Image 1 (cartoon, rainbow, N blue to C red):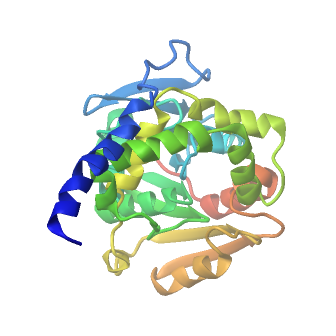
Image 2: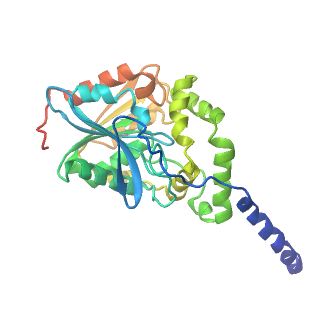
Image 3: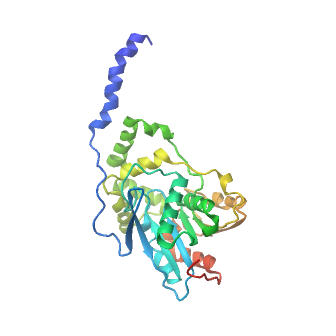
Length: 321
């Protein structure tokens, strides 16, 4: 193309690049003043307000601490059917909403790489129980990679890792650098706010995750925190800063790992979960019949029974461990 033609195109391209900035976007708002749940708590990490839920152990014997980590787009509500069963069995149970999700502060500043998320969660654990306390670490979907990174960071404090449809490597369709370009970054946020963070796409998403159409109550529970102004900033931050540890980082850790999968999981297939047995020396794998990607929500009785049988095994822990 002749150089003069390129020069004539530059103003046009410049004008097009400004178009996304003419579309108004919701700014991150203050978090709701009312606690969303009776057991809701808040703390501040690197200037970001985090929401977490804390259930004290209520069993006759204290059996340990458990941290529950949600997946993409999820929140602490993903574990609503598991808190009480674990608490009654003698576990202190904590679940945290990642920055930008659930009822944590909306921010584009947080780095969502696995190592950054793992560091954040250990900071939360330290604040709640001290730097020496050990934890069972349970991660769903993307959260599986995070809790495994936590174990790699502090294996001496990790009682067991539980992967629930867990993805260790993750995947991304957009090159990270694209979202460093301001017009593209804003265009993605526009698409999220105007088209994707809506009830119909959420229903389609949950249908895939649950392996069945969601109930209205399930849609409301998942959708309500997504409607907090500024959620698109958190989603874009995940896309822009995501990054995972290589699988080689987990070799030789010697940690105990349990995999729990839904038989009909189409997001992270059971064959992938079974294959983790080649990575972890101490690995056991279980499949819940009829379940899909979120068995702790759709098949809670089967899930809780399997999890508790695996965790307990007749072992109890001193409350200071």
